[in-house]
Amino acid sequence: MSPLIRYNKLHSKPAATVITLFILLLLNACQTQNNSPTTSAPPAPVLRSTVAVAFAPDGRLWRLTPTPDAVYVDYSDDNGQTFSPPQQVNPAAQKISVWPENPPAIAITRSGRIHVLYYADAAQKSTSFYSYSDDGGNTFSPPKLISDHADSAMHYMDKMLLDNEDKVYLFWHDRRHELLDQQLGSGVLSLYYAISDSQHPDFYNRFISNAVCSCCRTATALAPNNKPVLMVRMVFPDGVREHALMRMDKTGKWSKPIRVTGDHWTIEACPEHGPALAIDDRGRVHMTWFTLGDIRQGIYYAQTDDFGAKVSAPMKLGERERLPGHPDVLTLKNRVILTWKEFDGKQTTIQIKESADRGASWSDARTVFSTNGENGHPSLISNGQDIFLSWVSSEQGHQIIKL
Image 1: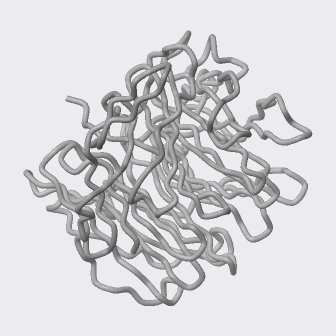
Image 2: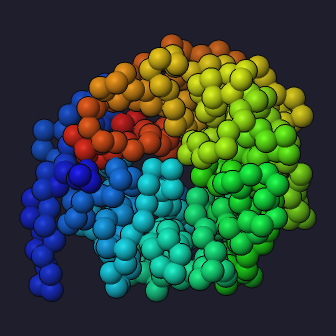
């Protein structure tokens, strides 16, 4: 059964009635419960325990929620304690497609434009649609396709990255070049991207690389030079699926992939377990990933100060018998926070581990959430002053805490 974001009191409008129930939100690192939440949420089940959240430059927290036939946007002015009544993005019903490894995305520019990326089954399954709002989320532009091969080639695992000049980058895995990779085995696609700004309004599609593992989402981050950096699980000629860094230079050209993990994981299958990436303001790249290789098994963290030329010794996260996975990482000044899921056969817990010195030393791991129900992947976000953890489960609904 699809999990529900718990709703609160009824909101009525002249044209339509929005049904809401109570939502339980955890509001701080000690998981203090708000006794009288007043949060609104979309009038339908949340698909696959998956939402997208992002802070705007003005500190407002925005949320994008997929439901079976629509996606909704709402916002919070109190860091997730309460949310506004939701607004529907797509005017006509669509068969919305989402799963935790393939989440939707939302980003807000300094001018207030709200960018939304979501998936719906169309000519190809899980087709990417983009929309935006310039009036605070009251109305949205007609959803448009991102891929110029949307009718003939599957594309998914989209990521949206907003730079410091309000330029929007979209990255995705694409099957249009699948035949180029037959020698590498199954589940190998190409990586594409598009840019949206005043000079590129039509999302002109551009090729980055082939030999990309099809079902592991690509991680994105912005370097101090305001250019994107990618961490990608790739399939190398020896059949090993390892991670590589790629970055854009000041001219807009992409570097060749630099292999940054050495786990020797050879598998003719889809791990469905992408990496996470964060870059601090001095250019240190913080990486975390999952592997079941011959050399390492589990999830690990490492860092590099030269985009992969030299990489620190991997640090193991969690215990293998508790099936650690789906990590995320975020930096803020000297802070680095890692989060991941663990499962003991009955209960899923969300763990965090923190460094106050750019990853030189670390606290012990601690549990911040737990559930016996269905749940999504943990996500770290920041408003520029604090770091927050967002997570959805069928038992507790959508929870946001400050770390």
